[in-house]
Length: 232
Image 1 (cartoon, rainbow, N blue to C red):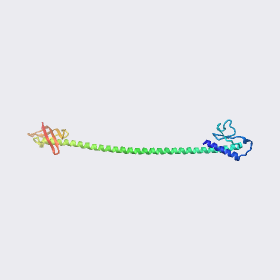
Image 2 (image 1 turned 45 degrees about the vertical axis):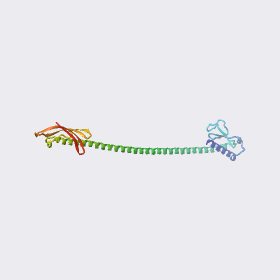
Image 3 (image 1 turned 45 degrees about the horizontal axis):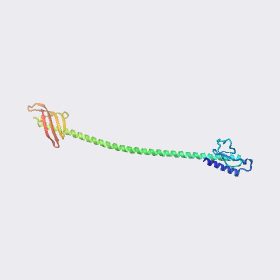
Image 4 (image 1 turned 135 degrees about the vertical axis):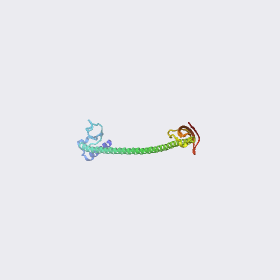
């Protein structure tokens, strides 16, 4: 870019010196040199450029009037450099704007992807939570039903044991059995139970006595079977 500017300045100086400036003057024998770094024209390379102290010159081969050529070249050099700087500023501004736009787009893309992943994870968590809740509910229901069934079987065994004991009493109508919590009921497996308790009832003499009993029986759909009763 800088070399192009220097060449343009050189061509401009040539045109001005050849077609515009008067010829045949004493200083037309001078050769104009242009600094390659800053574009400043001069007729003397000794000591370096007065602007940037550079010793790298471009020999134009031009021999116009030095004063007018220098002024014209200086003006056009400033114009070209200003144009170059402005174009660089515009280019850098556009580049910065493009980078900022790409950054925003990347941020929006990451944000959208993050939201999508979060929603997907939330749906997965909700689905798993629903399954766990259903399993827990079924487990609780099954546990309660089994517990109720077990307790009902024990109560049935307790009621059946009272019937068995009443069949061995002298006065069944006067029987007063201990409460259900006071009785000891043991599950022997295969619907067979052992029930231990006591009962207050009248004997053959009409006196109320307390007797302790042990009953074993097997529950069936219609009642019980294999009942054995031992009364102390």
